[in-house]
Length: 339
Image 1 (cartoon, one colour):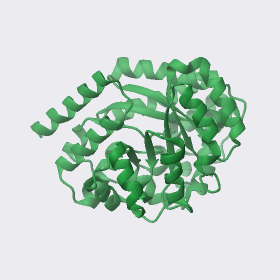
Image 2 (tube, rainbow, N blue to C red):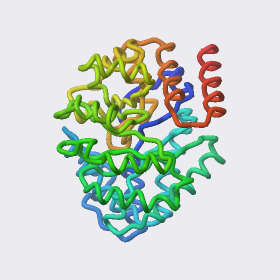
Image 3 (cartoon, rainbow, N blue to C red):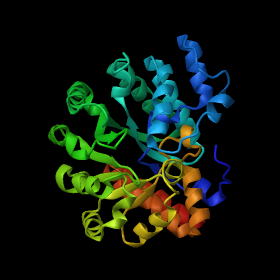
Image 4 (tube, rainbow, N blue to C red):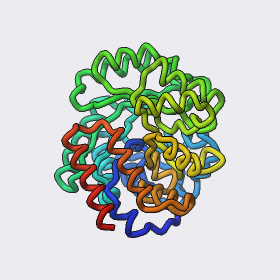
């Protein structure tokens, strides 16, 4: 984990996480436990060796380790244990609501059934609400470095679980895989009632054009990452006007780009963007949501009111029901007033 000292205010602040890949919460210790359970031999002999092997300097190098780690996820029980480990951890950071990504193609492409993935995650969601009071929703992501036809097939397979899936997203290697490649898939998803989001990763070739596509051609409700929008004032004004929020991940930014983008978070917030803080793939990048809030507090020199507003932003752009949103806003307001 990143060596960040969490302040009492950040620790207690009610939080909503909107950019969290559940497969990216696979800590080395659990990886070894699942490998033993499933009779899988790992390349490393200790959890410390696994952690030391995480030396990413760009998105492709991260994705290599990310997909390799998933090989230990084989059964519905594995996915339940994976998600419960995440919920247990963030309950201590006062996370109140999560809208988590999952990557079915990363599992079906290696022979694990869609049913095993989603039933395992669903079981954990129910148990997490019972144990910790954390509400959650699932966002099914398509892998953009696979064919659009495979994404469409995955979308159609998902329909039997429609009531368990709130929205769809797009992740994995963005280079050479623009949003427009999946326009037909997302149009069908929208017609089926799914809400839409897409990754627009930081500092990639064609970043602004990809952001334009997700806004003007795909019609997303929010954008994951997307801080490069500061380079285009016209698009920036559009997302402010439409209330399209951004899900920023400061710590993961430091691994795949030239910095945390904390200054961009501040600039975008000041411009009226509903920007939020999230952890992305915390087991790989070394920080859960509280560490990301603390990173912004420490590096950005912002006050507690600013941090509370970022938490409110997450409520505002979440896809939670109106009653739950009102409850979450009241929790944040009450906490900020007492701090």
